[in-house]
Image 1: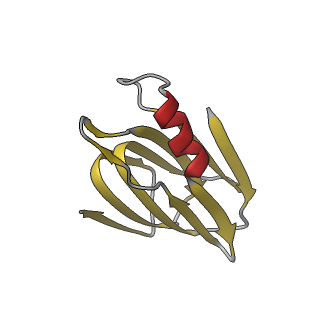
Image 2: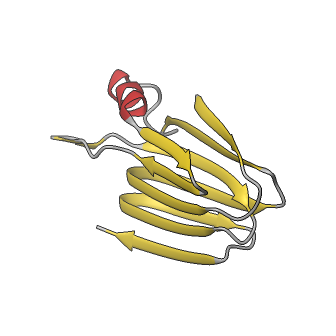
Length: 116
């Protein structure tokens, strides 16, 4: 599992791009933003999935979290990752997926979800 943690003094703006897999976002009373990324449960730890995690860009600047998972398509489909994020309540969330499940719990300020 690869993880990141950033301090946050209040609600943030989160922008997530996850082509395939699942995203679970939890908004809670927290002073940190926590992100974890693992190969999807149904495919296990393939070398391609591990490389995809290494190539994922995660940044947190000026109250904006960006998680950008590169899109990689293979003959047998895309590599899938499971993403978990915990962020402060009242944060805004913008998620773009191609084939990923999204589960959100807690109170967000706004949610935008787009499937491409």
